[in-house]
Image 1 (cartoon, helix red, strand yellow):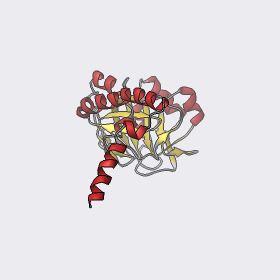
Image 2: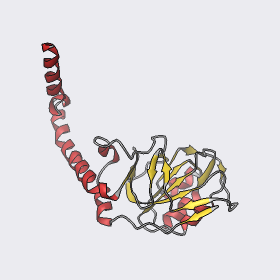
Image 3: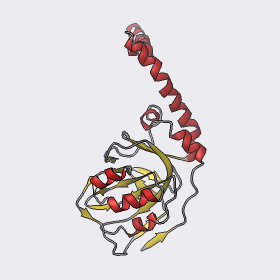
Image 4: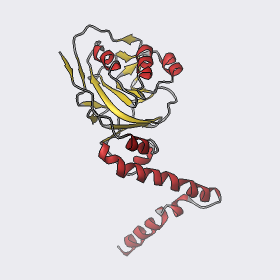
Amino acid sequence: MFIINPLPPQVDPALIALLAKAEPATIGHFLDFGFVDPKIHALWQVPRIAGTAVTVRCAGNDSTIVHYALGQLRPGDILLVDRFGDERHAAVGGGVAFAAREAGALGIIIDGVATDIGEIRDYKMPIWARGLSVVTTKRPYQNGEFGVPISIGGVPVNPGDAVLADENGVLVLKAEQIADAAPRAIKMQADEGPRLAEVAKGARLPELNGTNARLREIMAVQAKG
């Protein structure tokens, strides 16, 4: 059975540009949800990307819907592929990566495996996956879903969500979360430079970031017992 829905609206480019300045790991200092299982990792030294989620889901050896998606992708999209737990059949290889790149997609995130890592690196197409396999999917035209809610690494993803990904991992956000999360992360990143400069001069990080002061307070309370 196939389900094919329309493409979702893309996230406001201004919000995506703002999000791209934030690091997923910095947002991880104050958010706990939306972070994809770290077993889904970058397959090469990828750049940071931020874009709109285009979703597909396919099972077993049938990647027909992935090929359909290649004809739908727009510049700024990120293709997310839910493989229903399959870690044997690679649904993305060199040809798919090349076609996605030429369509303007920024990257592909697979809850499953990929193949043709040499070609993927040569094409400089950012890919995140659980690993590599030499067994590939086919196109038997049996099943596939496009533009549906999916799950990637334990995170629910709706078509049109915002995606931020780099070498450290993948984060999925609602578009309305960007205006709060991204500026907070960007400020934290800007504050880190001066703090590390102080450490380089001999200051101790736990004194600068308040850890020691807070522990002194706690120990004083405990001493009063």
